[in-house]
Image: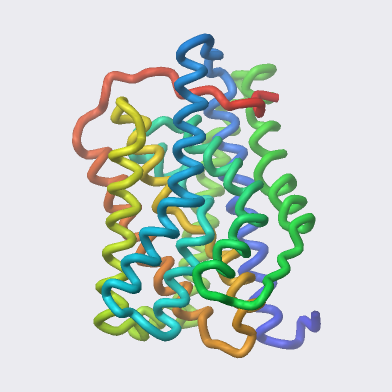
Length: 303
C-alpha cells in the first residue's frame, strides 16, 4: 500500500483508530470486570442460557426479521442490500461500552460480543448468500480470528488479570483506558466528518428509511423481550442485538458486489443503528439507577 495514495492513507488512519479503540475499550472492560465474583449453580446455568439466546437472536432471528421487513415494504436496490448485509453481521464492538452507559449486565454484553466475533466470520457469508442469492463469498476467517484475538480477547484477558493481581494499579489504569477509548471515538467521528462520509445518509430514500427504522427498532425490541427476567440483562441483550459489525459488513459487501457502491450506504445505515443504541442507552441510564448486582462472569474467558 503506497502511503502517497490519499485513499490508502485514509484507510490506514481509519484502521489504526479503530484498532486503538478496540484495544482500549476491551482493556477497560477487563479492568472493570476482573474483580467480579464467580457465579455458581443455577446462576451460571441461567447466564449460559442468556448467552445462547443472545447469539440465536443475533445470528438467526434478526436476519429473518430484516428479510421479512425488506420484502414487506418493497425496499429495493443498494439500500435493501446494505440493510440485509448489516443484519447478517452482528457483533458491533460498541455494545459493551453502551451497555455500561445503560447500566446493563456488562459481563453478559462482553461475552456476547466476543462469541459473535468468533462466529460471525463463518456465519455472515453464509447468511448473506442465503438472503441475497449472492455468489460464494470467501472471507479469510483465520485473519479475522487473529484480529479478534489481538484486538479484543488479549486486551480483555490482560485487563482482568491486572485487576486481580494489582487492583490499585488497575483502578488507575481503568480511568486512562476509558479516556483513551473515548478519545479514539471522537477521533473516528472527526475523521468521518472531515472525509464527508456522514452525508451518505442522504442517499437513503423513503422506503429505505421505513425499512431501516423498522429493523433498528425491532432489534432493540427483540433483545428487550427475549433478554431474560432482569432489566439489566434485557438492556445488555437489546444493545447487543442492535450492534452491527461495520468492518465485516464492508468486507462482505466488497466481496459479494465488488462493482457496487454499497460502502457509503452501509456506513449511513450503521449510523442509524448507532443512533438507536445511543438513545436507548441514554434513556435507560436516565430512568433510575437499579439495585445493583455484580456483573455476570465470563464463560470460559476468566483468564
